[in-house]
Amino acid sequence: MTSKLSIIVMSTILRLFVGRAIMAAASAIVGLKGVIFQVATIQAALPTLITCFTIAKQHNIYPEIISSSIVISTCHFLPVVLIYFIIFQHYP
Image (cartoon, rainbow, N blue to C red; front, side):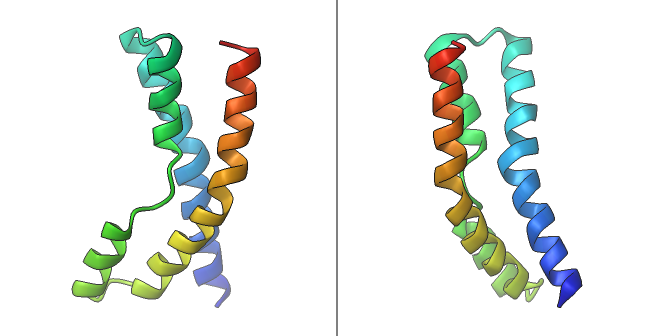
């Protein structure tokens, strides 16, 4: 159970924070600014998609881990996006 929990937590952290940082860096490299930059970085922090669960279930590839990751990332999405929104309001 502990290994499943660590996989779920790690996937949520990667999705919400590391994915957003990679998108912010890529957006800066290609020259996105303003609202377009903000939209791109917020979209990178969206919760894990249900499509991942559908594929995992069809191919029987850890569907319980994927479903838990979807629930956790969805629960953490709102506070993370609110933090990003506050940061973008103060540092455009």
